[in-house]
Length: 250
Image (cartoon, rainbow, N blue to C red; front, side, top):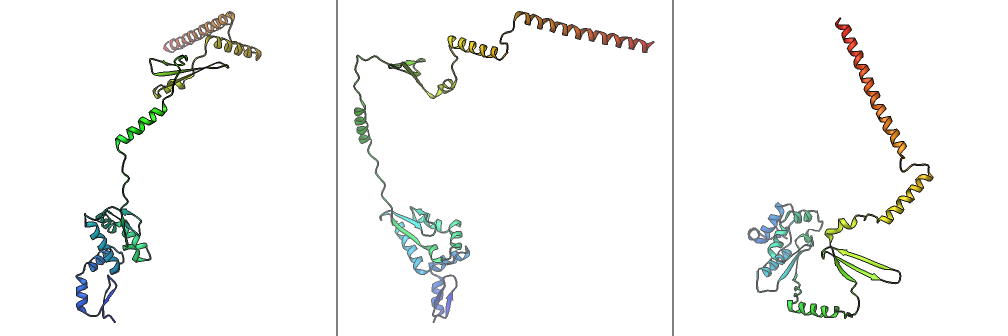
């Protein structure tokens, strides 16, 4: 039955000499750091597994390994980065909330998957050449050219003629999109037809679209009369104010 115990490592010893040797071990120091951080300690088996993983990572001749934390699920390419993660605040907080304290110190070490080698530029060029050869289409030189450039070469005008009529498509760059969104002005014939239809609909509703010369003259006379009437009223008001002022002075 052990007579002395270590509270940081939860380990028991038969005598004080074994306890002193334990206090000098790296396992005890590691658990002391975890205790200061408020995280429960790990068993000796987990600590030895961690040390083995770190030792394998320090060996540059060995196969590149991938270190992952069993608690957080994060993976690291170096043992140093994994060790920093074990001492990080997020890992320690998550370990303090974990009911099973043994999971907090488990490190999963596995070989790093090999990267997929990129294809050589020469192989890519050969594939592109093959695609370009497949995309070539034979064209009859006797056919009429239905494609032309417009607006100084900035637009591509494609004309398709069929039994139903002629269809014209204009393709351009994005910098002309504000012009494409604008609605073009109607032609002269369309404008006249639209004006006549609107005038006829207004007349049917009893509205007058164009004022006659008599109405224009009448409006001018009324405006002149209103203007002279206002001036006459101003003159009368001015005369009354002058009379009142003279009466007061006398």
